Length: 285
Image (tube, rainbow, N blue to C red):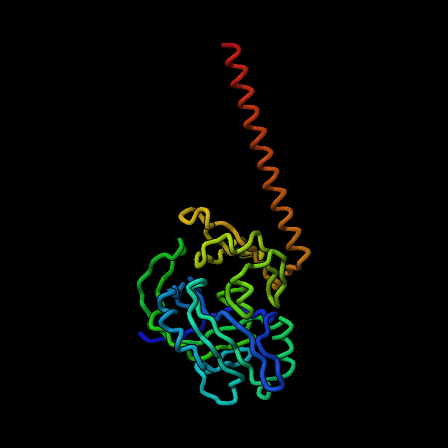
């Protein structure tokens, strides 16, 4: 079954390739392997399918703020730029490319927000074949697989989506080197990293829900030191629509650390008491 889909990512225009009178060019991760939610269930987008589809992203048109009402691009005036240098990267199991915005066709305020990072998200519009085979990827269950992907367009400046920063988006060269440990605030989320992404197996990242009511989730992955082991948290995500601020998010992290430290102290105390009890029984014996 041939279907139309969208796949989201996030933008960070801190690494501008070109900013001339005619063009604004920024690098981006357009799509990445993973399991993402769709109305019909969780979809798995395999790295092998993205690798085969990478050439279809070359020259794809860029639209602004949202996908076309028709989902696929049919109106010439919707075109605000194009994708250049699209290629698959084994390092991130995803498609890289530069987004070239045509300034004459873009709103100046929109471009200013792209440049300042207020508009960070990008979203891929594509065709795919629906493979109803369920399974698991990195312990994440999925309901179907997206195959024979063909890229139609890329929407820039859309709301936060399925593949979030810093794992998809603009300025990917900084991501490939190292994800900063400094907290980051985007238009919709507060990001509080726990450790650098270079400590994790590339392609093992996924997003889990910590508390849906409070809007807390986390990016988890497998450590390079234990690639076959359990996942560990790399970054916490706080949904700003749930009234999260940077101060509140950092306070929540500190409370979590304190709770973990208190639990550790209690366990140490318990172990000491057991040891003392055992020593006393040995002396009496």
